[in-house]
Amino acid sequence: MAYFSIIDSVKCVRNWVKDVFSEANPKVATTIEITIDKEKEYSAMIENEKYIFNIYVGEPNFAPYRSVALQIVSLLSDERDLAYAWYDSEDDEEKEILEHLNEGFLLIQSK
Image (cartoon, rainbow, N blue to C red):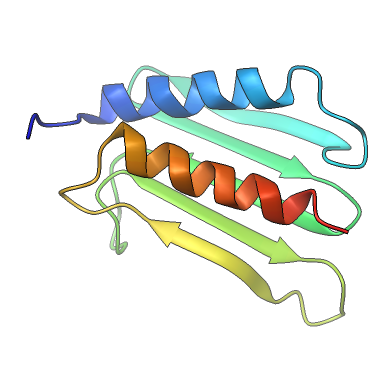
């Protein structure tokens, strides 16, 4: 298995965000904010009336992931519950990252 670097992960996630949200329905994403866009670090926040989808790629700082962290917070209650979370591991590559990005996308577009 080839090593999937942070640079590879950033490219994968950046391209996914561009592809999926370039023509997004407002019900899927009312706000798309790219907060960091560097070669070795990327951060995006996708928000709609029900969820906030946070995507981070970079060097982990005391975190349970190799380089990719996905978290979706539900806005459906006052509790702001974590509706979905995924963190990559040493063995994860593009396929796994895209599977979990798509799983998060399916959640935020659900009714």
